[in-house]
Length: 166
Image (cartoon, rainbow, N blue to C red; front, side, top):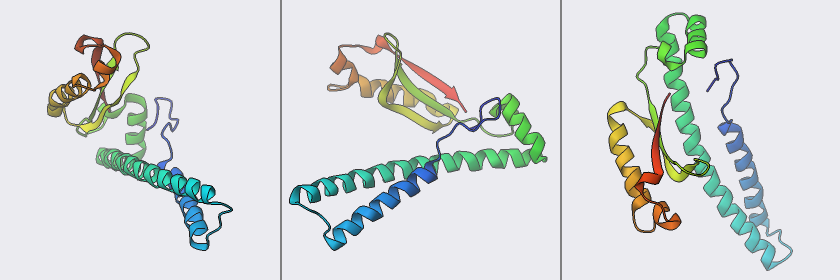
């Protein structure tokens, strides 16, 4: 993603993923040769390996989503006909300047307090006709027994859906 001044603001998922895979290979190598001073060190390394593998899976999914967005944007810039003008139009006017279907992100945020995003309530890459259905699902998720609202003593009025076009 580029901000309106042209600065790159996204995380570099592929570099993060490469770094995680390097750490995973190093830990796997330790297991292959049994390079542990104690049983406790081996258990700690095993736990660290499982954590790194989980984190690599999460970042791989995020990288795939970011790549899909980048491909979608690049295709829209190519449709303009002139790459330079298409890129400038995107930086200055945003995605509305390009001939592409808008995508939306929906998240629930708390109305009171700091207004932070409720964990686990962000959905991306939605079309306009999916927004209402996803919003209802997110409200149902936080209001279910054991959900965020019950945990913090809140109700449905304490949340609002934030819809962002990208």
